[in-house]
Image (cartoon, rainbow, N blue to C red; front, side, top):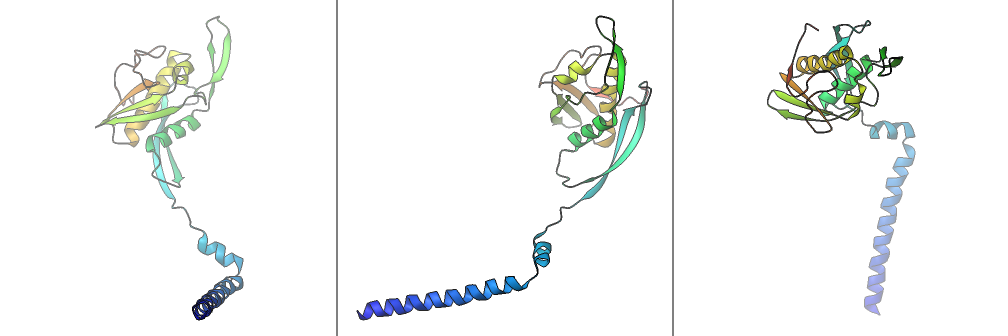
Length: 192
């Protein structure tokens, strides 16, 4: 029984010490205003301003024009090429009219929201941009196709260290979109 009394006494002392320590710790946090607790636990995301040079179609959808945009990035680890493409899409929110195969005039977005940049592949100074199938479906006229392709190519080569761009659709090299050959690499062309 003596051993039992010693064990119970020791257990009681541990419980008493733990209880007092808990009370002191919890008692301290109850005295700090909630605002202070929130301020201490709140971690601000690092924001960085970045300037991008874009080549976007003019309002008449005839030529490319230079446009500089500065945006705040929360996490610069994001894929820079994806950010550039998203900026281009937001700047190409035009509607345009084209003739359908049946000859009627149809109004459509210049660059459809359904067009997605799936991923990129890099090889030295070359970059492969892999778009979904909507990229090919989006092209209704040769002028639209030319402006979109060179808007992407000129912007990517201007804003990054890449010299040449190759466009893929669904991870495949395709011979041509609807009007122009895609089986080659494109380089910056400021004459468009």
